[in-house]
Length: 202
Image (cartoon, rainbow, N blue to C red):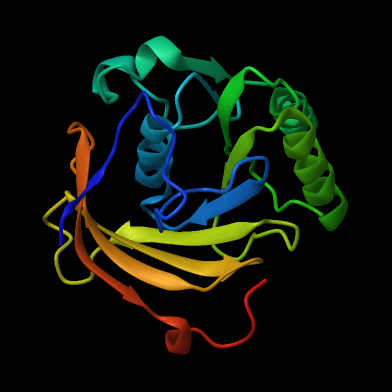
């Protein structure tokens, strides 16, 4: 398979299966959700805002982030879940922001999820909420399950990313070779997996 461009100065192509639809809020779960968020941050030009609780045990270290991202990244650490959700909603409404990533501690209610979608539409901003397994919102546009490739966890460059919810399209599964520092990602395998997932998307 050919390399898929990962240009920090160009938005994702419409035909890119790993692209997040703009003006909507998406979700990522699994142990590799932060790697997926960094991957998406590199692909969205402009300001990136990352919101996480002030007492989060694992912080982002600028020295360990992909080249070029620290200069575009604004880290917010609000106190409490209410302030975190308020920060997320207001940042999504801020049109100059390209991508907003948030790590709430509690599941989003349907009302909160809908409010975030309206905020993203108003600001034409893409949102990515990193959730724990089983804490997804019904309002999410898509939900991704992110992990290391089964049986090859020792190779940190291989990522197993599955689209397990999609309101407006098909589901899928991709094994991606991305080390977090290069300007390209290699699709080790890219196969549609609609039959693999039970139920109707969304």
